[in-house]
Image (cartoon, rainbow, N blue to C red; front, side, top):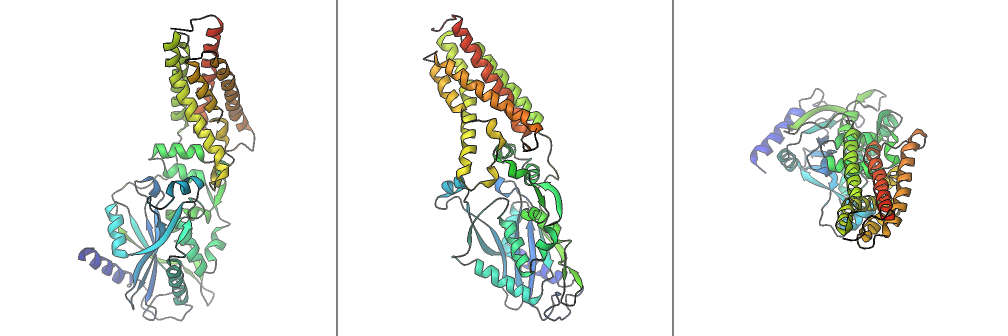
Length: 423
């Protein structure tokens, strides 16, 4: 790292040391860092980046020991695409993440190069709490302990930081925030933060089931690094003498990024999906209209019908197969009524009908059942249990599913009426 970054980091530590009260001595129960307490602990928060896997931001614990010179930033967000069994683990919902440390200079250089804002909040921990935290992270960094199964909501880089701090604080974070309503859901935050990534947004809209719509507490909301940062800024912790003191003594921005800040709320996107659904339905109906024009017409009609049915069928199979994985937030997914595995049969039958026209009858019958399920999934939204936030998938799939049933019905009717079947 450049000498300039090292000098800058040293200047930062010197500046933070000038916080009022920082030079006062203390007993073990006094959280004010001072000359008798060489360790300083910071919550470091990185703003969201441009890649899908860092759209939610990142955070770490920075422990600086002025006496020993040890100066490491510990984080739980390390993974590699080259790990053994990456794809099978991803499919099973058992992504393997690790924790590790880097210097503050490396941290500043890395996230500065990515254009991301970085903040450091000094935490008012007692010397004993700092020692416990330092011991905990170093033990956790051992090869036998550093790996864990990542869960994007329940066990990620931010919840690991939250839980490490909560442990040394005697559960103060959970006690204070677990009963505090956030007014949000897992899906609400996911839609908000994936707004700039439409393909990822669409994929999550498809696979995220009813568990994603559960109201979450402020404690659960700390799965987001930016929320952990803001919530802890308002937390007061009890001292040995019974007084209350802010956990966060002060905040300094280490890196001023160049990226736009993340969206503050999601936007309504179902009209765009409805437009796509109507366009898709029109193409399917147009394809059905040419199916009676001999082998060439059947081939032309089969393309859009089979493509949609294949995509819907594979998607439906994924949603059903999710029950065999640890992707618990994919369970109880109403979208399986819109993208049914039955569509795979339609895709096969439609392609077969190009050379064996009578198969279109079977394809039409299956398509009618798929359309019925799709309409049932839409109508059921008036019932209390069907409260999944899947307006986008409904807007896209219902028109196309109905159009497939109509197009195949007309194709079959044209054959029954004696329209040409061969070129």
